[in-house]
Image (cartoon, rainbow, N blue to C red):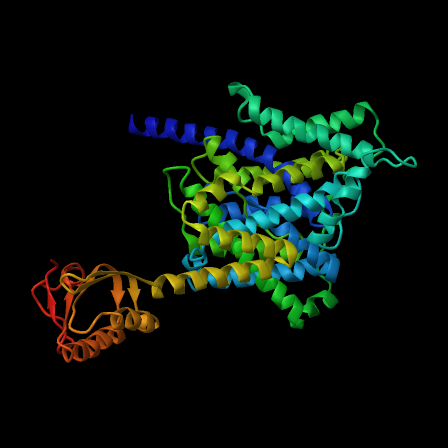
Length: 520
């Protein structure tokens, strides 16, 4: 009886994972090709990464329900690499990045990648979203993206002018196919029937946009997949492998590893919040991503990360084990091997339209509101990171955000607020201290104390104080002796702070000569 029940449960799990794998496959198929085109690479290289992400990383990942593949967040980096060093160096950088991720996992650095301010991470993703949006606008018009984010932004008015037919160009026709695709995705997202809720909008957008182009026989650029997958590989040559000694290539490998790891672990954390099953083993996930990126590097394919769009679709479709992620890789392989002629009918403008929509979604307004709840400083970090990514480059933007987050941390742990009240009738001065009293605060504290009249009774309230260091205690002790010489007294209201440090409120501080008593 127990065995029969177990078999039924196992069959039910496999059945849910089987259906979920089809949903994830339908989400991943257009995105794998779209991300490749946005990266300046052939669509086949994106599909290879998706296949490896399923069949290999799906087996060894530390996050069972996370789905890995080519990610829009890496497209900007890959495009920069391809433009500056050529497509052949993609594999070399992938090998370096994968090896670094593997080592990070072996040395258990997974948790450290999570120790990055959310404002920096979301600012980075939003910056990437802006870059993808402004570059894919041009691809959606069957035009080439410009060399940088700022140039792409500057060329947007020119792109809109190309929507109007001039000199027999087909830019307006490509734009029509792209617009139909975006409208389909938006309408489906808003009004999809419950029975078809699992049908992904991007897939429907590709289908409708492609059919639109076929019906009207639009003479626009189509996807080009090789007759067989092996001929589409981009295996690094001996000359390319010599790039291991090039400082620029090594730096790019480090940047790829950092960004891919941060995005993967951020995604894994989000996936953990979506279900109640097994939690992510972050170090194992890093090792799995490292192995996957090394395989992709050896094949010359796009780098991979954990991808939130596919992972969310996986959870929402009812997946409970890693079987769905593995199977989706098998479906991708089957599609490329058995039906390349179908994929070759998809216009590149349609895939670019999906990335335009994806880029727009990466600038998450709801997330900005959430960050704003934590104060203006977090918003400054967010927008500084975003602007840095768009105006300079991704690494500089992240470093800028990280530096601001660090400065905010230093400020928080060294900032002291002092509120002063003086009762002239009783000649009593009350000083309320809030924040952290450290050696940085000595000039501020000294100024507040020295403003007390001779002979006054000074009360210092520390119940709102988070921390006080030895330098400030010494300063209070020295100033008390000076103030006593003028006939005054200094009383520190230690009650709350003493209890926080686990000492009896009746005890005096260990600084000689400093008067302490319970709060009054």
